[in-house]
Length: 141
Image (tube, rainbow, N blue to C red; front, top):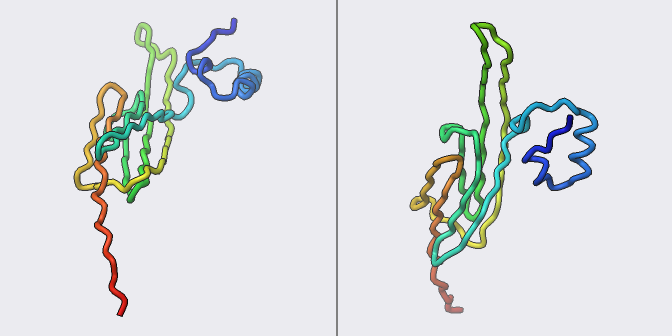
């Protein structure tokens, strides 16, 4: 029997999903691939608000780096599950994966005022824009 899985509903390339299924028809669960980082970036007065969905990852395994106007979010998935019945181990699954997502903003970010919060699989970044330096006109001698 072939079950429709949530991850297959949102695959970017449906043909790739079909080929992957034909090559491996006995897939077990959603978490078999590395975590995917999906982001929303909003710009308001002087601030970029970033919402990144990183389910199944603990906050200690998330790394955020800011370099000027480039932001990189990296996450490492480490999960181990065991199913036991009457003291016997019936199934053990270990999942490990790594994902990284980089994007550029139009303005540089003030790293000293940036803030990050992670709750319920969602990372919220508040990235204030760096104040623009005033233009200086040089006198020609």
